[in-house]
Length: 180
Ligand SMILES: NC(=O)c1ccc[n+]([C@@H]2O[C@H](COP(=O)([O-])OP(=O)(O)OC[C@H]3O[C@@H](n4cnc5c(N)ncnc54)[C@H](OP(=O)(O)O)[C@@H]3O)[C@@H](O)[C@H]2O)c1
Image 1 (cartoon, rainbow, N blue to C red):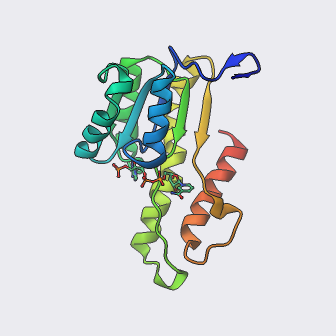
Image 2: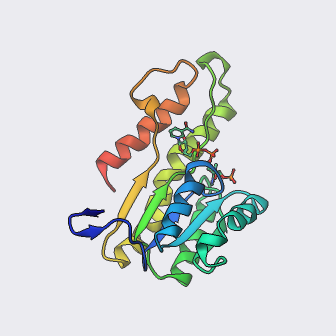
C-alpha cells in the first residue's frame, strides 16, 4: 500500500510514541507498528500494566528490543519532560506521535463532580496539549513527522452522559486544526 510514494506499511527505522499504550487502541496500534518494523515507545501510569503490555508485545518487538515502556502520567508535566528526555536519550528523535491516552467519565451534567471534571480535562485536553508541546522538538529533529490525536465520535453526535468527555475531545479536535 502506498500513499504519495511512501510505503505506509513499512515503518522500519521509524520511531513512534504512543501515549496510553497498555490497552485498547494504544496497545493494538503498538502491535501494528511493531509488526511493520517500527521502534515504539508506549506510556501508561502503572508499571505492572506496562510490563503486561510488554509481555503481550514481546513476539512482535524482537523480545522488547524495539519497545520502550515508560511510566508517565500524561497529566503530569514532570512526567512528560522525563518521557521526552528518555526518548531523546534512546532515539534522538521521533517520527510519529499517537496522543491516545484518555479517560472516559460518562455521567450526566448533574452527576459530574469537580474531581471528575478536572481528571477528564487534565488527561484528555491538558495531557494531549503538553504531550505534543514536549515532544515537538524531537519531531523537528527528525525533519518533520506525524501527530495523530485520538478524539471521539462524541464530537459529532450527542451523548447525554458525555458532556465533559465530549468537550475535552472537541478541545483536542480544535488543537489539531489549529496546529502548534
Ligand atoms: N473506546 C472507545 O469507544 C473510544 C472511541 C473513540 C475514542 N476513544 C479514545 O481513544 C483513546 C483510547 O481509548 P481506549 O478505548 O483504547 O481505552 P483504554 O483501553 O482504557 O486505554 C486507555 C489508555 O490510556 C492510558 N491512560 C489513561 N490515563 C492516562 C494518563 N493520565 N497518562 C497516561 N496514560 C493514561 C491507559 O493506561 P493505564 O491505565 O495503564 O495508565 C490506557 O493505556 C482514549 O483517548 C479514548 O477517549 C475511545
